[in-house]
Image (cartoon, rainbow, N blue to C red; front, side, top):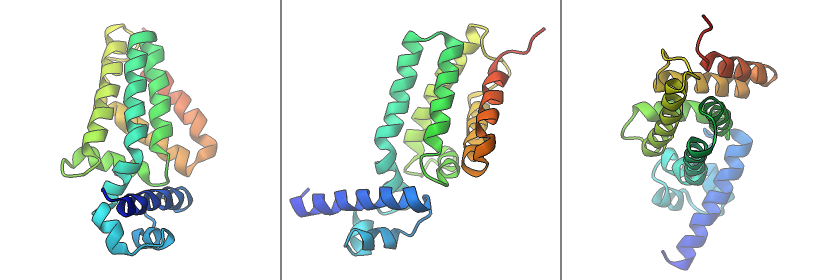
Length: 181
């Protein structure tokens, strides 16, 4: 990439992060280009869709979430590893307002540019869940899809009812454990 194109690319990413922090993921892409001092054609040349822009911005943090899962699989007891990762996944899904919905939608849409990253994230969660289930530390009637629905619910709560979010996350983590006889 030419040096000027690289500078434009980096300015767009910087301004997008600021805009997503302030206004959520549905902020105007044209406003992001304007704040970067560029035309919207430059933004769309680098990022043809909102999902492409988000995938670039989230690439490192999604990769880190996968790395965290691998580390937990290798070092932490199964139930604790799952609980720790669920907390990290909820925090990640609320990086920007509106992100949780886009992440969940992209899991179902193979054409979404976020799909691959979300599928890898879901695979990490599935491995942690299955390991905890084999160890008897997570309920056997929960699927990976169900786990992600719970994570999405906790993330939604964190975004829309922050005063209740700690309690909801605690109940979610407690509910992952197998029922008592």
